[in-house]
Length: 155
Ligand code: 4NP
Image (cartoon, rainbow, N blue to C red):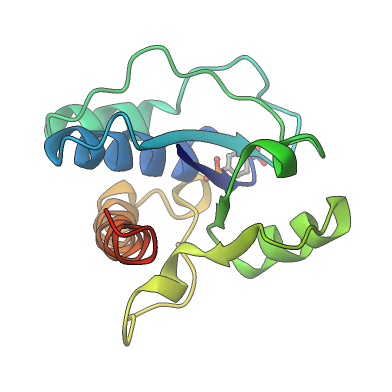
């Protein structure tokens, strides 16, 4: 089983959006028994909260299930559980490196998987208010990430 953890700052806007999109793609491809997905935040402020209303609205509009997700904070033990820790921006990456580094665990930004991305980071809709823009970038990133995992794991 390959385990993928999406990470953002609060775990209420971008990373739960990525988790829901990625899970729906895994299901569409029949890879449920091979890839598992979760999300977490670097910060602690929203622990236990459901995704932001803007994230729930855009996922509902795109007919992607978002039930049962509650925010949690990343912990050092996650480096034992996950093969891919996928962040949204450069600050997430530097925060992750402060928490832990472990050989063999891939720590990358989601946009690193997109060839010639229009943006290097996924903008935070908590501040921009633009959940549609974030959705399009996350969706594209998830597509390329899934292709990369399938290629590397010979799925
Ligand atoms: P996220 O957005 O990292 O995409 O979940 C944020 C949500 C909450 C806060 C910051 C970013 N906050 O400062 O509370």
